[in-house]
Length: 286
Image (cartoon, rainbow, N blue to C red; front, side):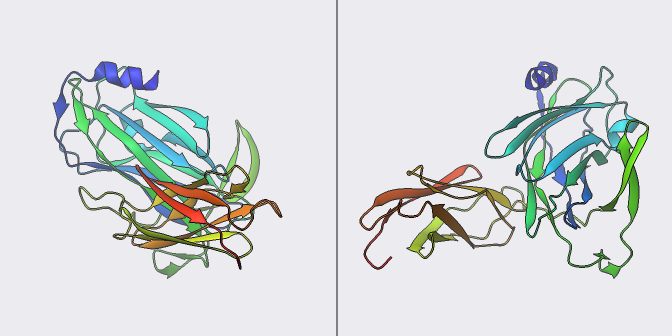
């Protein structure tokens, strides 16, 4: 329904160099971190926006209208599906043709799990705008992330962590620390997911694979979804690979005795729009 609504608006296209950027932030386990979704570089201002975000099921995300969209009288509607990742397709629009200015068009509240030691990536794709004259506007999406906070350092200064009161309806629930965003990491125009250089695997309390890429990861980072050709050999969860990394590790587990010497199978990773595959044969001495 969301895709249909925006598609109905688009009667032409306008070239553009603008971006829709998910911010980056740090936060403590069990807290809510607010990350902005920022429109920038717009010369032809959009009257409507569409995007898709993907994130791990270990975090909870709520999206709301940001100041730029609120000033234009827009409403936000998102439809989510749950698979290996949570996928949310969102439409920011209204019955009016008022355009949105550059700035924060939406706010993303990320609830971190109580056990959290790494990075929660927020990958964005399917970004598109509609002008007040019903023409499509090309918009580049830039992914973001929330990392574990090691101190109360924000923007290079040591400050007390701010708090805000949140609740359901008019009932105050509790006070939850909220950490504001750091500057987003931006990708270069035309940058894409690199290809695989090699995958080297060995057995040590499970299958451990080192993946080397032909070039560093861009676009603010990306998700890796590991899989194998065996149902009894699995990876516990998706992996977030940061911008600038040119290699990463993937670990697979199995039930005791399920994998034996001489077994042959395929390990693979879905990385952005690419698939990496590697045949593995376990030899004696594994």
